[in-house]
Length: 172
Image (cartoon, rainbow, N blue to C red; front, side, top):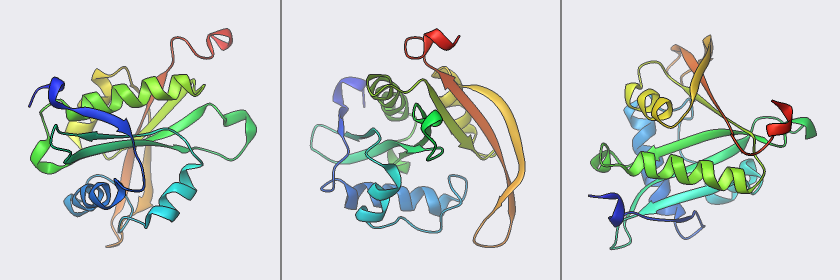
């Protein structure tokens, strides 16, 4: 599948059943999130406070993946900082879907006034580490044993950051 066959659009409630299945596949794989299951749409959107969210579909309308931002803090000083979530259906990995989503989310974030994107990635998720690094994110730290999986295992999280080159330039 080429990038010309990927259709990107804002993620909507109509997309959520298929997007939630992609999310569940990421959860089942064990190296994507601490979450035990995909939440219902109303809970998912409430957490994201109308922050940018993008869905990727193929030309037939099948959901290939999604990417979204979540607030890192309710404090006003962090209004331009978002935490990235990105999920690609297992059968569509390594086809450019992740890159298309992450680039579209970064563009949407800048249009919405975000100056910093954060991504917390399990060290074992080599594909996500490589994707974020190739899209301008840099490793800024390791959060050791920061969270516990539903099965009780403690996990480290690599903290990646991408600073906008256009939004918030006056702070640099």
